[in-house]
Structures are given as C-alpha cells and as structure tokens.
Image 1 (cartoon, rainbow, N blue to C red):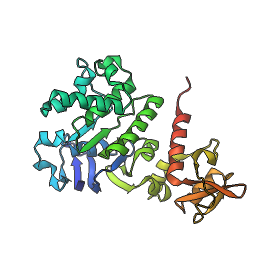
Image 2: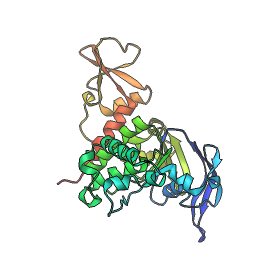
Image 3: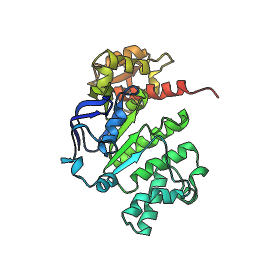
Image 4: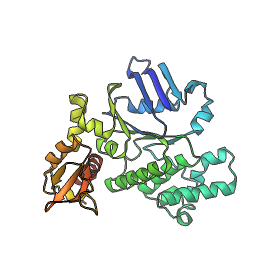
Length: 320
C-alpha cells in the first residue's frame, strides 16, 4: 500500500531528520509512528502527502511513486488530521466537513447525507451540530469534527499527526475509543503519529519505534511488549507499562458458559498476580481462568494490555 524505499530527509543546514527508512504499510492497517521528540516521526508522515519533499529514496503508494501523482489527486485521496484542529471558524460544521466533497463536485444531497452519517458515527446529533460554528463546540467535539472531515470524501488513506495530544485526558480517551470504532468499521489505511506509548498500544495494528531518524523496531503491540529489540524500546515500553495499582483478573475476564470449553488452554487461578499473569501470557496467547476448580473464562494478551493502558491514563489524569 505505502512503501518507503531507502527514504531520507536532510535539511540545508545538514540536519538529517530521517535516515534511510525501509518499510511497508499494509492495506487497511493502522500503523503508528512513535518515538521521542525530534526522532523524525512527523517528517516521515508529512513526506507521504508531499508536505515535506524527500532528499533521497522513493515512497510508493499502490506501486506508484508519489512524485508521479498529480499533487491534488494525491492529497484528495489522503485525509489529514492535525493536532491543531484548524476548522474554518466562519463556516458551519456541515460546511467544514464538506470542503473536499464540494471541491470534488459532489451534489448537495449526497454531501448532506454524508455529513449526517459521519456526525452520527462519532455521537454528534446532526440536527444539532451541523448548523453550529466551531466556537460553539468543545475541544473534544471540534477534534471529532476534524477526524470525520478527513473521512468526508472517503479517502483511501488517513494521516494523523498527534491529533489528541492537546486534549484533556477524558476527551482524549473518548476520541481514542471513537477511533477504535471507526478503525473496525471503515478499515482505512491509517498512519498515526504519537509520542504516547499507551495510545500506540491501544490503537495500533503495528507500531514503528523511531530514534534519531532511524527505525529501531517495527512490530505488533504484542511483539513489542514480548520481545523489545533493545534497551531503548524496553525502557520506552517499560516506563509506560509500569503498573503499581490493584489488579483483579475479573476486570479483564471474558466469561464462558460451558465448563471445559477451553480444555486445550493452560489454566490459571483467579487470584493470579498481574506480573505472573503477564509472564504466562508471554508464552501463550490466552489462558483459561479457574475458580473453585472450574473454568469461568479466558484472558488474552491484548485485553490485558488495553486494560493497563486505560488504567494508566486514568491514573495520570490531574485531580480536579
């Protein structure tokens, strides 16, 4: 889908922002670029839609060099969501959402239908919000509109540059949940930049960890947590996943109705401590949980990781 072939970016002052990147983003994949400030993740993202020119190498989209696309054709087929929401303040929400469809000469009825469909998708009542101006919406609501505006013309790809980092923790978590639903329903190829490992683990199909313009490791959330490539990745993950709160297996348990249905799985007691559970899940994808000598449910790696991400976000929320 999107292929980086030996891609580099060097600025006139000699600064190398991106150094010889080689990787592929698959069709329909949610691909997260993560790393510390200055690692090159935003530069990498912006080279995809030619907001930043390459110094060396080639980026292909569907086997075609991005330099061979008409710039307008390329960008119309790529939705773009920024940290700075950038809605047009003088336009209604409906007008903001339909900017690109209007440029593509969609008819009025089709555009109205699309606005209603997208607003409903993120829990905003079309009759109430379509006619409002951006200043009448909260920050979280504005960012919801920013996300669906990027989806309005049904682009093949979505680029998202730290879209939730300026939001308060509650709004951020709600937007992440919205995005998970959109991801499941729309299956758009999405490239998402963040510096927040909790966010990456929650959203990504695969994560690309970057440092000093280079790729350190690419893998699924499970692969990164189970087999970090080096100390840098381990520390980046370990700091974010350190958990010192109470934990009860019931909170991540998927119940079963028939005893013995998961007979092929290893059993763990319902009283198992978190660290021991994580160690066992590093060896087996899922485990059966026993209580009073019988299986009552299962737990799996991704469920536990998602749970810990949510709990850490709640822990880090400022006290009101």
